[in-house]
Each structure stands twice: as C-alpha cells, then as structure tokens.
Length: 368
Image (cartoon, rainbow, N blue to C red; front, top):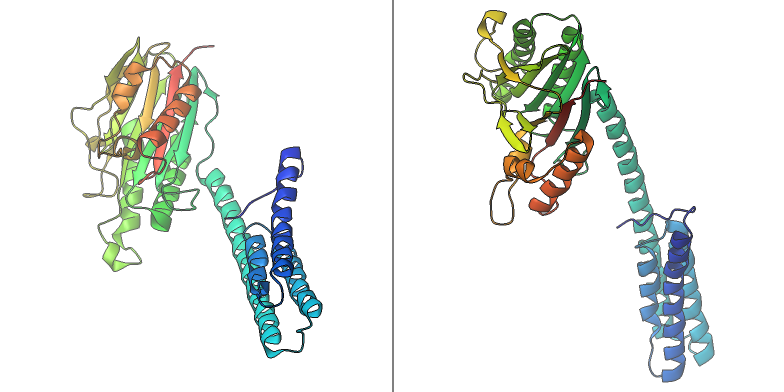
C-alpha cells in the first residue's frame, strides 16, 4: 500500500515522523537485545526487518538509508563481540547486505510502477472529463446533477454515458449503457456521445435524432476489427426532450431502464408502451421507426435517469438494489443531494464495490 503524506497537514507530518521512527526503534531494540544476550546468541539477522518495514511506506532512498544503518549495526556488533573475522559473522553480514539490496531494488521497481499508474490515472481522469463532460448545474428551467462510477479496477471511465444539450427552447438529454466493459465500451461511448452532441444542437425532430444515433452505432459495428465481436456491440439508451414552455418530457427508450419521476413523495415510472431495440441491433432505421411518448413533468418534479448498474447491484444476500423504494422513502428535493444519497446508499448495499458501471442524472424543473 502506498501512503501519501500531505505537507500542509500537521497531522500528516506527525504520522510521517512516527513511521520513520518505527524502523529506527526496531534497530535499536534488536541491537540492545543482542548486547544483552551476549556473544553466543546472534540476533543481527533480524535487522533485515527494519528496511523491509520501511519499504512499505517510504521511498527507495529512505529504505536504502535504513538498510545501510542496519548493515552498519551488524558490523558494529561484530566489532563489539570480536567476531568480525569469523565466517559466521561475515556470512550473516553479506546475507543482510544482499537482502537490503533486494529490498531497495524492489522498492525502486514499485515506485516506477506507482508513477506509471499515477500517469495512467491522470490520463483517465482527463479522458473522462473530455468524454463525459460535467453537466452544468442549470440549463434553462432545469437544475441538473450527475454521477458516474466505473466498475473496472483502477478505471475512471467505462461504458456508461450521459449528455445534455440545449436546442431551441428545449433541453435534450441522453443516458446510455454500452455492452461490456473496458476499452471497447469506452470506444462505443465516445462514438455515441460525439454523434449526439453533433446532431442534437441542430435540433432535428427527436425521432430523426434517435435514428441517427442508432445508425451510427449500427454501421460502426457492421465491420468490427475483431470478427468475433460481430453483432455484439449495442447500446441501451433513453433520449429525452424537455421543452421549456410545456410541463412535459418526450421520451424515446431503446432498451433502457425507464426513467423515474419523484412527485409529492410518490415515484412514477416512465415506462414506454413499446420500447425500441438498443442502438446497433436489428437493421438501419429511419425517423418513421420511432415515436416519442409524452409524460407530465411539472414544476418541482424530480426526474431520475440511471443505468442498469444501479438496479442490478446486488446486496450480500443477492437482493437487487430497490431504487424506486428508496426514492419513495426519502424526501430529497435537490438533484445533487439526491445523487449523493443514492451513491452512498448503493455502495453500502453492494458492500462497497460495484460489479457494473453506474451513471445517474437527476433533473428538477425549477423555473427562474
């Protein structure tokens, strides 16, 4: 485990001094015990524990310093007991020196790995901000909040996606979930987000926009680089249009979990009567293949979009996360607070680790 010390924190400085003192105290205790037990008991080999302990929290230089100190104490004990020329003492000293060299080399390699991992995390963080641009806190009459968590170990990005754009007196929002995880899912997410942002601003009719998104994914997957992946690339998505001057939300769902509206302490599921296939499945489509469904979305209503990583998160006994029940039992009115509460409760339900990517978008109609 890598321990970072923050110089601006007095508590961190105190912990650093305590950690550095630990191997020094250990060396002193071993030296004192060796002196007390006399020349017939050799405790010098135990000194290797000091640099090994240092390597768990310190850098290669500190580890080398503690290791050199341990070897020096071993040599000093040999002088004290007059056994520096004995084969036993020389073997112990040589073995201790080699062990210290190995520990320092291991610590150096670990530092290189940690530096590479830090760079990868930084690149992933930048990529996430480019791919999943943070949603503004307000668009027109809407307040928004969003949350994203990737299930892939050490990842910052994955296959879930969301976006919102402003277009001619309305706001268009998309949430989606690309099949699978890892780089393939990230590539599909980037493709779909680019297509949505480029087309939604031009304000085509909502069915035409959805047909464009489907065809973008379909034709990209038609001739994949990996022939084994043919037919396996698809994206579940929900595309919404929220007019400024109407208490409505227009929804086209393509195999995606239905949005939820929290209204006066009740939860309303926006389940479309005839959901469409996910993007990329079936055949190319036209706007005639899609028909938006209208749902009431009034002032003060809180609309929640989510991916299946939320409702399919399992608890210790295999129970799915009861999202609708949680929303009905809470009294959260602020989008950001609702998102944070869902995130904390979801992690607690799943035991602190998620098996799938998770994306959440909360929207409240709140005119200026």
